[in-house]
View 1: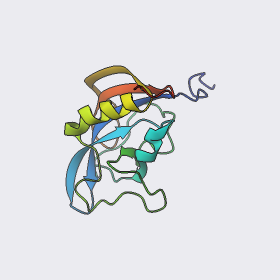
View 2 (view 1 turned 60 degrees about the vertical axis):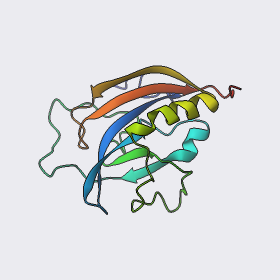
View 3 (view 1 turned 180 degrees about the vertical axis):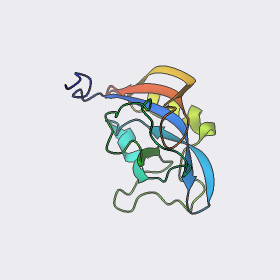
View 4 (view 1 turned 135 degrees about the vertical axis):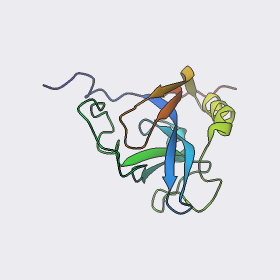
Length: 151
């Protein structure tokens, strides 16, 4: 049976703070990610990236969340929010320390969203997705592109 929620092309995007293992530096980074490729100018700032599991001991269980709209990417890929427009052919430069957006960048991200026609619908740092292979991610906000720029 198909859920009516699976066929909806939602223009709502959730922004998360979640851990990513940077294979170049061999360390963990908490970066801002989005739930799906957003509409509008924010899409130029998002890179689709393959990421390894945070631990070799992680595995899916019967209680893992069901696949989501980004199910093809949810466990092995993420949509990372980058500081600069993304070159879609080359992807982000993981060697640079200022490639990704971090928790300290949240005020700047909110300003960008407001100045580029997005409506911030909900905010709050809440725990979500305990069954993901990438570890715990925290909800920063949900937003929707409305297309009109505020002056």
